[in-house]
Amino acid sequence: MKNMLSMLLPRRHMLAMASAFALLANVGPAWAADESPDAFIKRITNETLDTIKADKALRNGDIGKIIQLVDSKVMPHVNFRRMTALATGPAWRKATPEQQKRLQEEFKILLVRTYAGALTQVSDQVVVVKPLRAGQEDKNLVVNTEVRGKGDPIQLDYRLEKTPGEGAGWMIFDLNVLGVWLIENYRTQFTKEINAGGIDALIASLAARNKSNAKPA
Amino acid sequence: MKFLTRRISLMLLGCVLLVLQGCATVTNPDPRDPWESMNRSVYKFNDALDTAAIQPAAKAYVAVLPSPVRTGIHNFLGNLGDVWSMANSALQLKGQATAVTFMRITVNTFLGLGGVLDVASEMRLEKRKEDFGQTLGYWGVKPGPYVVLPIFGPSTLRDTLATPLDMKGDAVQQFNDQAARNVLSVTRVMDVRSGLLQTVDVIKAAALDPYTFVRDAYLQKRENDVHDGNPPARFDYTESETP
Image (cartoon, rainbow over all chains, first blue to last red; front, side, top):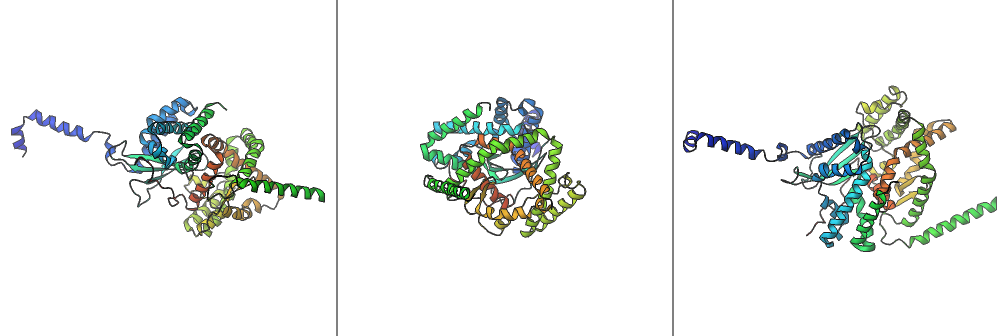
């Protein structure tokens, strides 16, 4: 076989072909193919924590830098559209693309701003990823972690879906802090606003909340 | 004196009537919160009390005591709290958790200077908080309606009924000296509230309606705790998205 090929192709073509295959196999980082969900969470939380620990401006609550960090490190791994849609409920499908876009923007600012405060507390924390619970589905899978540092450990869980070929192969679509899932906790409040004045009222009150949060207390 | 008591009870009756009248005004009531209007009044009262007294006191507590002292106090009270957690782990027939918590108490009391140092956590003996409300939940008692208690804050009917027992079982109450009990109780309030200084600020900033936010978070958290961190999924993640 080898002899036949070398008869058909000059040696340097063989070499080129071999390196092309090698290149193809390396498209995307090597772990993308079969990273387990718990390894994925471990990697991105450690990357984010390391960035925060290394950057004083972040820990001092520099909101611009925090948004930059969230956009570059966190958002590529989050299906934020799905998060917002789930928090909004059935009204999401009736919203125009423009409304959906604005809703996502305001919701994102609200979350980033409010949780930015937590970053100022980062010092010597370690994230412990717990063993994956068996029998979970790829499209709705929970990874349990615990943040350990000073004081009592903090329960921090992620809900993931498998997204082959997209992002790192996994996307986060819900977050649980101390036993409270984020989407579920926003659903009732969102529904209340929508019942009172429709999707525009919800966008308006999110924007108002963001505006008052932006003011230094 | 008698007249005064009567006046006070009349006033209280008036308040109750006002509150009940308010009940009619809640639109789209949540089935888990049938007493929303009364709860909202108590929530408002608690919030005002917190802003006026408890939060400033907790801030002073943080300002006056250096961090290692506060950690020592936190550990000491936590060690006392572990005793009741252990009892409730046992009542839930959780053999391993009971043993681990027993080890925690032993290690922290004898090696951790009476609980001031949390040596057990360093040894990977994990803290597992259990109270009587969780025990009732474990044995299938439903939480019942949401209740906001004056001063104590968010609760459910089940947890409210469990509270007197939790207070009785609290190791702090085993001290014979009344003064010591009082000091420990006040210190515990300061310890808990100072630990929540940031959390409360975050909730107020993150919520569109803080009352609803706290209620939903409390109910979710209790469900989470009863099921040791893995409650059955209730939320429907399949809907949404464009058809």
